[in-house]
Length: 501
Image (cartoon, rainbow, N blue to C red):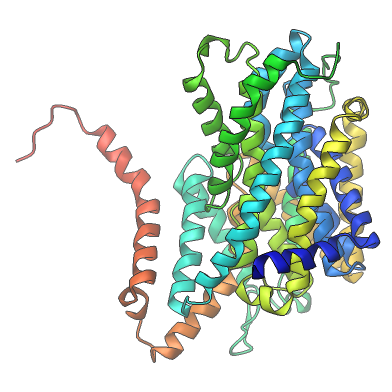
């Protein structure tokens, strides 16, 4: 009952004219950005962070949430019509969605993607509504060692799962931890890694790093990889309406995709890629005609798109309740919280409940807006695909530069922006994941704070981290995640018939 009353209060906040306007702006921008190949919600949120400083936090995060959900919707358009996913979660949609477009059924593919996204997003948001308060209750019982171990596990999971090797993930993580250590020690006031540069005494701004990695670095990488050649677009033909057979084959994948996407999205490094792959393989195994998959099976579009949107709501649960991001966009949104001096977690629900519940309620509103935007206006979104790529990439870089300079009016921020942007480009070219960099930057100081707090309570006894049952278990799990790939490689190299005395 308490959760329901809090949600009703959230609707009273989300439906204010100003907040409703920013929700419309967010879902429109998110859909437009999701449609464009190679540019995802993380890049958009990072790009707009410097430009939202004048907004109230509630309005800003309602817009960011709209961008997040909108990009999940819009990513299907480029996948289906271009065979080029607009963001990572739409990769599986391209397999059958583009095949349907080549057969003249692109409109039906877009329709099942939009309706499935609406259904999955609504159900998953309801799950977020009730899961977040439960996570808050759990978080309030965690001690400093438990928080320390939980954040270590989060970093270990992301490091082990992303990238082609644990070593690459660890390298990116240590870059982030190093960036997070720059500035003055919060306890002793001693300068660290500033090299005599006065501008670094306050540390490296998280917003500058996020914009550098995800707006500048990612845009340079996409431009270098794809160039400016125009794409071949499959035109929409026929009716937009799904037939009765299309509905019959789609509704079960929508529900199964939701059940897969929400819990996996809430896991560290779950993201949207894993649930969409699982949803696709599940639908193929359950299908009576598995040979149709890859040739235009509508289930191959319905399931992954539902899982994609459900994972977005799942990622917001640990972000809001625990302050732990489980996806790239959630990590950038955590940086946005820091921009406003806010720290997600159990205390945010108590100190700023209007923001939290207004944000959650806006997700319901945004889902309705997105359904209205996507089905009747699909022709408009398709036209965005004809924007020349050099204009698009150049515009992003200009906005990123102007937005970063507007933060403090300091030219040194631009030096940092482009330095970190070039670092992001090099990391992407070497296939090193960039998400651990931003997580190390954000979570590194938090880990240090919880470690010092735990050692202060235990009077310097380091065994406090393993004697607490929960923290010891979490640290053991983190160690297993990091070491397991190396152990598995050793086992594979051992000859099958080898006998050891």
